[in-house]
Image (cartoon, rainbow, N blue to C red; front, side, top):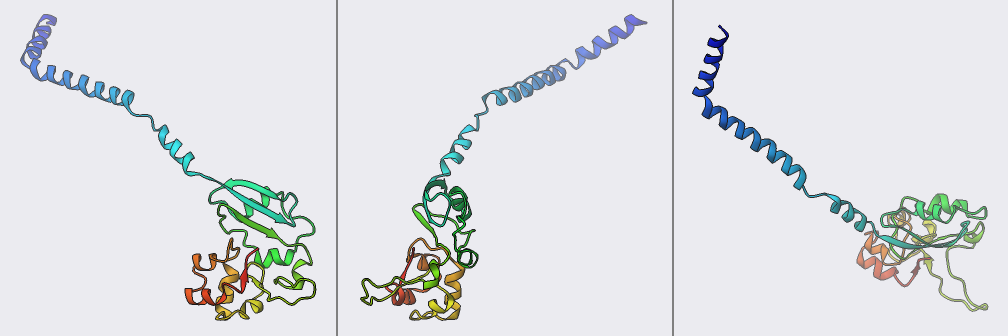
Length: 198
């Protein structure tokens, strides 16, 4: 009986040897291909490098009522909050009213940005530049610190535009009023010589 089973098995093997051989060759090729593709698969470390390269460093000047004023290297896309943290936070003499109302801690920083935190009573005199030796000079409105009322004194600036100026603070330069689309070109031309950023 066992001999008959063996004979029948080998007869079937002989009968289907071509499909069996092809199947075995196919399996070898598939498994070999999978193995080879795993070995030759390019390492994707270049992606990590490109991510690292895309994170640029920027320099930001933080001064005024902070614990450690100075120029700090931050990452592009960092916010005012990170710059203040780099300067060891606000000092005890900082103008808290200004910080609460005018300093936008969520604003993104640009390379070369300047952040000035005023001292306690510094803003009480108004956000204007004073005269020299009693000679009256035309004062300019600081768009980073001026009140709603002060902003509305500017030519072509009403309550709505004044609110927009306040909500888009801080500004790195006067041109940011145009870049951030806070005012139109016509209004900017009217006020550009009457405003200042510091």
